Length: 133
Image (cartoon, rainbow, N blue to C red; front, side, top):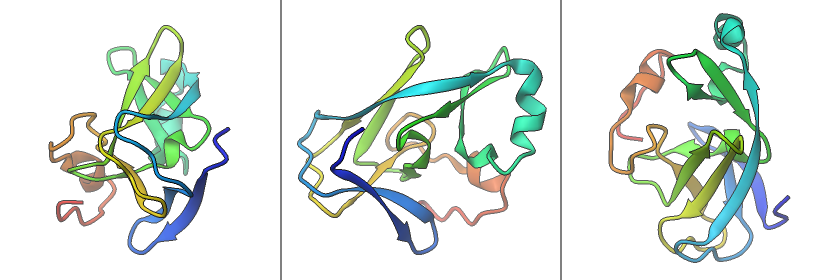
């Protein structure tokens, strides 16, 4: 576990992930193991309170992944300061800094996996006001 990461409440977002120290551009922030749910559990999972914390593992198969560590807690930003990469074979998700991230700054990813891409769908199906988050 990375002891320099911590959780803090963010107005309008809920919990967010922050760092106690500077994270340099391209630096590994975290490598997280995944719990992968089989496709037959998809409907039950997305109708549960945990739905906001799952990533699609394989859309065609309907499998979902819960990312351990801080992985399922990073908030969305259209122009994030971090990026994630899914390794299906190793069943891990890694997070890297896209830019220098000063201590005390929220670490955000783009939920679509593509920095700069608006990703309204995630917010719309949850009836959350998007407004370019």
